[in-house]
Length: 122
Ligand code: 5GP
Image 1 (cartoon, rainbow, N blue to C red):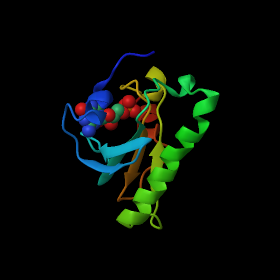
Image 2: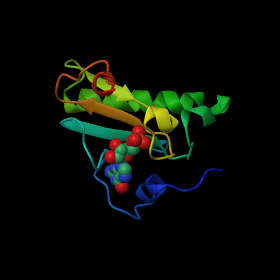
Image 3: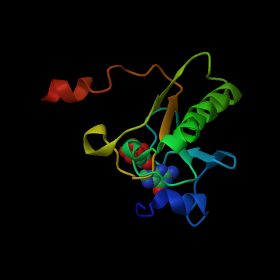
Image 4: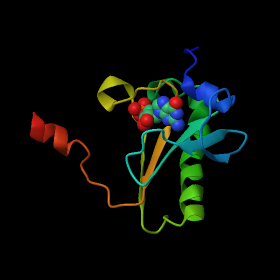
């Protein structure tokens, strides 16, 4: 079992977060360092460290995170305008918290590809 992260503390309400959605499987809350006008993190309540650690039995749970993203998008009114969902994996993917989380970014046209700036600097 992977080590507890800050997200377990948010699930357990040990540290504050602006929670926008919760059900028995998942929690969604505002990212503390938003990269778009709307930047939410959707996490499973079960701790899974990285994408590499998703068990076959958890495929439906991970799909649920995308379903939650779409429900929030519809509820908040940006589903038709569009949004981005991202799940980073390990160092090269930019993962800093080892409890999988789906980033939900919306509210402005988002650049693509996301690595363009880093390539330009290289
Ligand atoms: P990653 O880099 O692992 O894909 O994304 C981790 C995200 O968690 C980052 O966007 C970061 O801003 C966010 N984050 C880190 N610590 C906290 C926290 O204590 N509260 C909240 N709400 N977000 C956090």
